[in-house]
Length: 402
Image (cartoon, rainbow, N blue to C red; front, side, top):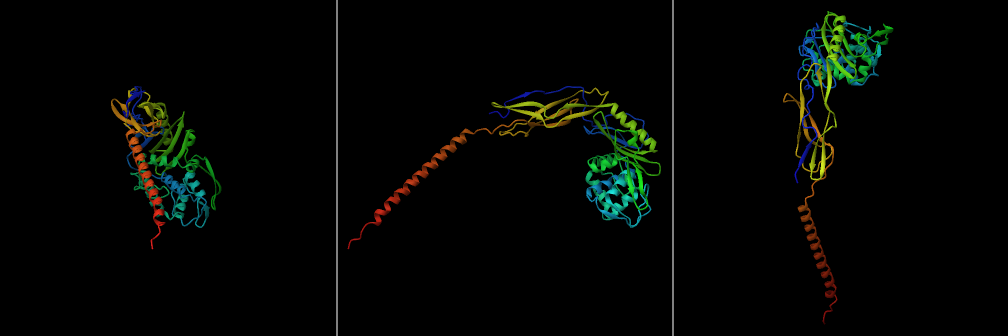
């Protein structure tokens, strides 16, 4: 039997006006933005749509509170009652906590995410083992996430020369907290009511003004270091597409919001998503004698392309010879995505049908012969035993002569 006697390729090579999965930025031209660094990624494809100095380390401030909040959420102790200890002179926004005040961890988290309250961040870190231990946890988490160019030096977001990050690292952190529902819910809350010993029944507005500038935006954090540098992490969904962006080092809050809006609108209007193959699409049929096995794309594959991109891309199919049996879902090959003859991506092909194992008639016949032989031996042995048993009584009934 041939393992793959015939292969009917439904689509051996699809040619279309589509680009490769982005190896470089989709939009590579100068966007004339003054911010020191930025990066925008398309969430459906993972393509970097536009970037500037995305791997250049810069000092940063309040964005550190994103990691602080994430670790608070991870600890799952939001109902804890926190007793506020002695606080250093805090930086930036504060909710005016005083030593000895009791407040829930949930309230501290809200003050951190919505209002960027530095005294709330310090109090939460003190409760969770102290600022030194908590700071180590922040850096450990950064390493775990792959933020290799980031170092946290304080838990509340004071700008320090040794507290460094990159736009790409902050993008990693943004993706992490986008998966934390409680964080995102708070990041999109317009305001909270604060009940403290000093500030009682106060309305604390969300410090991220970009939520008002671009209504489609969701979170994530705006940072003002108090020394003329402004940062922003956000994610925006328009017309079914989602872009996530980080901008670092704008010269003012107004410039930050204006340039981020320009950046996102440019990325939306000058790019589009082009599907190459859909998940479950049958790409080939393998024939095992009289049994057909459909080979289908295990996942979909799309690309983000500039609207002016006229590159021609195709794909080819590579099938793997398989021994029976084959189960539905088994890998049976892969699909190469090609750009000008070069492979830029791939998709696994999986079986859509089951194929039973091949019957080995020789082994089956030999097994039957062996079974018959074993039965014959068993019957012969049984007859011998029966004869011996029938002979024993005749010998024992003989009488001895006097």
